[in-house]
Image 1 (cartoon, rainbow, N blue to C red):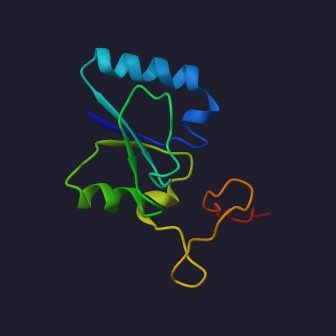
Image 2: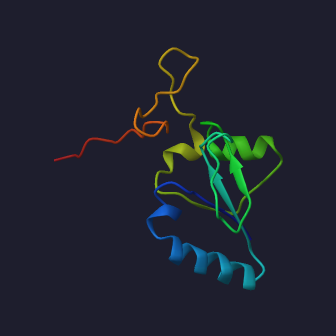
Image 3: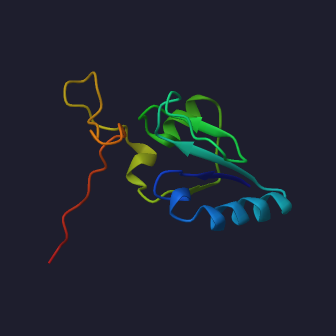
Length: 111
């Protein structure tokens, strides 16, 4: 199987767990790749697997445009699998001023 693993707020929540998951998947002949919405300039260091940077594009459509098909997607926020990060003026994604990552939109709780 080809497995896509998100980085921010997925891998980063428990790197030791995900490193063991990656090793186990590899032992069983599966391929795990990190797919992140980061730009290539915002590199991820220290991962033992390949990283695909989508530059704020929807992950599934972006990887398919590269001819890469994944069987399983692991992501804390699956809305970004099929959606690009929205832009304010059609030229720049909405950004978090603290860390230059796209702002993640949250749904309001239903009471």
